[in-house]
Image (cartoon, rainbow, N blue to C red; front, side, top):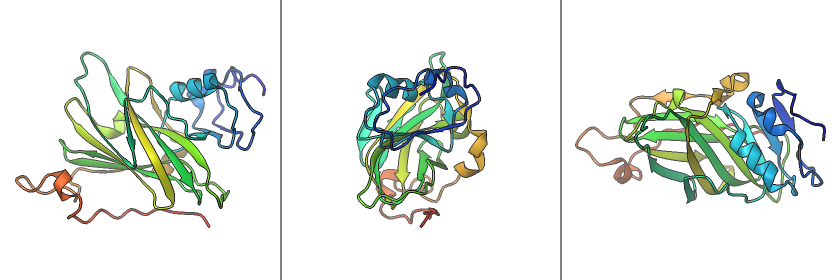
Length: 235
């Protein structure tokens, strides 16, 4: 691979199906401009490369990072089996809360992007967004990989004391583990290149909540109709 340290305007890097690839020199220096890194089926990436790419990522919204296998970043604060992660936003204590880094381990039989639903149980709001990417490949036996993306707090509007649920949704994807990390004092920027594909929908009065005095969100999940979402899946 060439040295990427001076490629400051690169948007996408797709090197999937490259089992001999171990390092990409200087890639951490060019992350500030990138919106997509696809390294699916790159089975021999070094731990150094994985960590630098995942921790150095700044792009928010659509697209993200795709890495081969069942790799779970050990610095994530909230990790859970399945498709839901619940956590609280602590007081800022003089720091700037910038947003959320999200990951999921998934097996996809049909290439499709992932719906992210952010539920604020205190403010009673809901944000829907999409991350990932529609691809043209099809894997009849499934392909295990990690997807990492980010959402900026300029979209989320979270603050200290909020109780938050994150739901990862797509019926075409088998999701085995999910995680969320709170981002403090780190620059994050919206992916303007694919902004329309992120499909942000912010709802200040989501139907999943009852009026004051009614059942809690947790008690009502199985009794209230879920808001329908449109998932587009390529043939």
